[in-house]
Length: 179
Image (cartoon, rainbow, N blue to C red):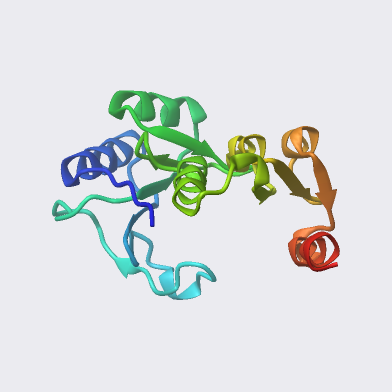
């Protein structure tokens, strides 16, 4: 329903910049249903065990929808995001940074979906736990944080439900929607 990608040139430029700024860093590039990753530990990953190993020696032929890298400095991540004019996602307590095209992200997708379905944004609900969810929680009519969310998310949420580990989203939906 909604898609936004970097061009192949932008994708390869960002990957090059990341690898130059932090040689040996782990980088993933999501392209549709395929994720490229330069880690030898793909099989051990819970989330990315089906990733395709890629050393990024040759340019990728298509653009990515999201590029994620492990960097020791948020300043470096911000510099690269500014250089390429892309959005930066910072994850809690980690040195992993997500680079997305300007028109990408949860809020853009929710807005497009609501418009397509004829639903007002104040009639939507979003759930979140991390800093990259804050814009979405503020956009939707009801922003619900799970109990184990970072403090910044808990502070802006309209409501708080049980933690992820306790199936907080499902419990909230059962209570508030299914009754």
